[in-house]
Length: 168
Image (tube, rainbow, N blue to C red; front, side, top):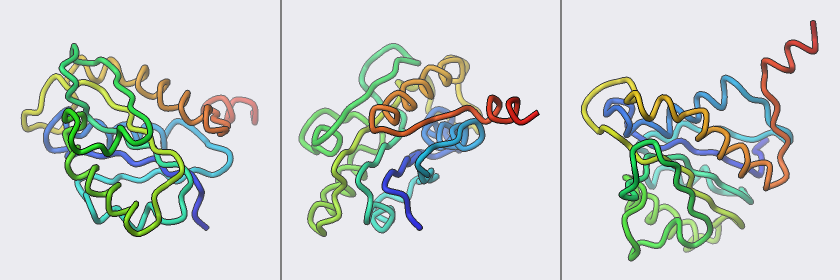
């Protein structure tokens, strides 16, 4: 059964910081437990192919590398209609694809009640499987921002390590 909340990591993991969203959603999956159940999705570079995953969701949080002209490692968050506003500044490196996805969701009547994009200013988009040092060092702050947004939506988030230590 699908949860009402979906967290989607966007990006191409072959281009260093461009894969930030995928790395972040994998870190969330590895480190945290969400109540009620929350679906975590590696959306990669799927674009409009993500449309079926939006159906039946009340809240969707996207994670992506965000080119906001800030210092690399800076966290950027955008909510509501600003996430998919195609005529505004290009926020996410997948902004056009994300705008198209949200437009198609609205046209099909499956647009979520709440949408949020949380990302980070990349330092490098060069070919490579690893995040740049500055983005890697800022990952915990990014995860904290994401968790704060999810808790604001009423989710309970617990670290797996804390749950396991209470079991022993």
